[in-house]
Amino acid sequence: VALASPHFEQSDIMRRLRAIDKQAETNARYAQGATIGAGGTTIKDDGAVVVVNQNGTAVVRLGRLSDGSYGAAAINSQGIEVPLSKLFFSERSVRTETNISVTGDNADPRIMQRTGPTIEAYEVGQSGKLRVDLSAVFTRPEVPLTGQAPAFYFGVYVDGPVNRTPLDDWLISVQNITMINGTSQAGATVGTSATFFLEDLPSGTYSIQMALQTGQGRTITVTSREMIVRTY
Amino acid sequence: VALSDPFFSPGDVMRRLSAIEAQQRVSTRSLSGTTIASGGILLKDDGTIRVVDPQGDVVLTIGKLPSGDYGLSATNSAGQSVDLSTIAFGEYSDFIPDQHTVNLSANTWGDLPTIGPRVQNVEVGNTGKVRVQWGATLVTGAGTNQLVRVGLDITGPTSVGPSTSRAAQAGHSSSGTTTAGITASMSFISVFTGLTPGLYTFTCKYMTAVTNNGQVYNRFLIVQPY
Image (cartoon, rainbow over all chains, first blue to last red; front, side):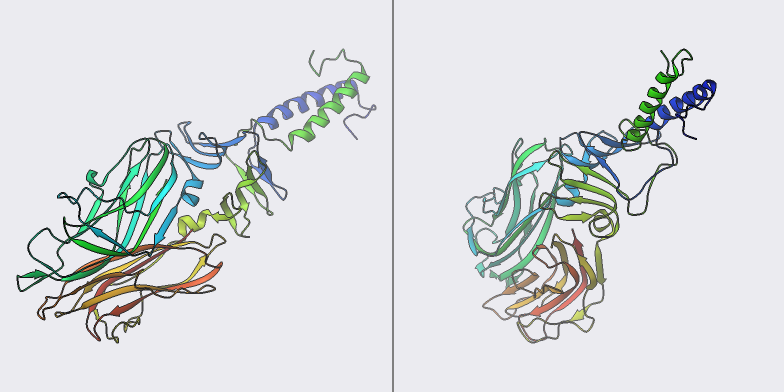
């Protein structure tokens, strides 16, 4: 018999109404042991599902995130959200096989030349972290022992809300490969990679540029360069 | 006045009942302001939770995914989806510590007696992207124009052969004849794009500048589709 049947006693109806009131109130705010079947559920209009730990601290959020994007984010103990989309899609890479010659132009080889390649308009979030992978193939000719080492230096410039230069330790070098009878340094070919982690970058848009250098007055040839950038 | 107030007329009661019944039907389709407590929510029978952005595009799915698998996936602005399981568990690697001589003709890519390192059945999804890192400790022979390279060969729906411009390598050249050999640990990291989705095999290949002259050990290969 339907709840609205006129054959119910009024007291019965009142009792059932009170039960429905209570159940409706509970259902509206509690989904314990619920099941979502075909058709599913949609989170929209700034709605969110938040997972809280035993201390009541949010650790995962689904829906609209604090940076204004939508998706899912893990939240660390400092309350910093890292959107999963950063882990999945933030990586950008650039590669060139155009040969370039680099001649050392500074007595301090750590002052590196902005040869590129470059990744422009790269967004770093509130985590402030950036990972940069560099790979390159270099060659150099045989040279006398006198003068600066025809070493390979490569690193990265980061320009944006703050600037980082290779002088801040963001460089890798491959120095003397071998000597010939104590009179000259052999020509060399090297293909290798390096990984840099940068932290504490203010959130914002950055330009990331590969940089190269060799000893002053020396010349190296770079046959391929690749840079991979990720934030997380 | 409370819904259950006995002074309501039967007609009022019926009208309010209808309102409550309608509200119940809405409540079962809206979870606004809901708390999920112990016991949680179970997704089954292909049920999903989706996050949509203001444009109405689905950017995140939990449950049955666009790939047909189950779990969590994110979708980018190009409509490409990546499963969380690919990021969390999709990295493949292989390592061969033994030292081997590279017995190959000069300037020709080939295999060592122990082929690899190699990873097989790597599933590349609809992004068509994979990041690969590989390398080894390279030992060149003494003399002029010595060079050892480790390149990468990709076979699958799209094939990419090894390349000297995409290789970990170390070598030396000179006008003299007594140049010492060198030992150097070298690696390379590269992103390959435009791969047709499917299953792939990644294998390290080797080249020397002088026939049968060079050694490698501690060879490694790490492959991450994403």
